[in-house]
Amino acid sequence: MITRLVCLFILASISFNSYSNSKVTLAVENSWPPYSNNQGNGLSKEIIKKAYHAVNVEVEFIVVPYARALHMVKVGSADGAFNVTKQANTESIFNFGEEPLLQATASFYYNNDSDLDFSSASDIPDRTTIALILGYEYGDAFQQNKHRFQEVRVGTQKQIVHLLRKKRVDMAIMFDEVAKDTMTRMGLEHSSIKQGQVNHQSNIYVAFSKKSDTKAMMKLLDKGLKSLKASLENHPLNP
Image (cartoon, rainbow, N blue to C red; front, top):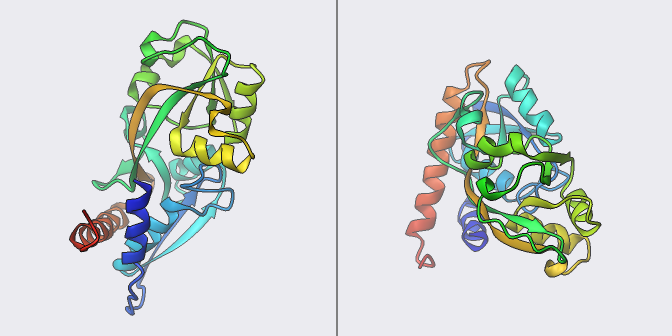
């Protein structure tokens, strides 16, 4: 998936000389590398920039913690926020377009000494302590079972890794590429924590505000994303 996205960026670097006649303001989280690092930069932002550039839309990015980004969209102080999972509880709050930015897989993670190995959220016992990121969504199955768990919500991926390694929680849910990137940045081997079975696979979207008229910007993003994906599919390097 990462390789395909890199190819997409190269293809999308063709110069568009048209003057930008529209503008959209998007809140971007600061703790989901390689998709969005502490400066808000990463794969997700690059995809959005290229997609909107293709349809002559200027983008202003506001870098904040994920929970804050969602709040800004809820109250209408930002047009949208990205890296949001489209599931029942988010669809009730935000508008979503048809085209996802990317797809990401999240798994259960444990301390290396742990014997736990759950196959789904419904298998996790009551009162299990689970490390999670503030404001993140973890799929409909987890949402339906979360009332049974003791959630330990933190602000950064590094905090989750520390909690697991110090055995302060029973388990965690992390997106796999994010877990790898985080441990690399921490100078740790990827085997420093134990990766378990898949919790869910998510299509990742820009979530748009229902407080303001953002449907035009949502449709333009869909148009730009379709254009980029078509360019990738038609490229001779694409298998």
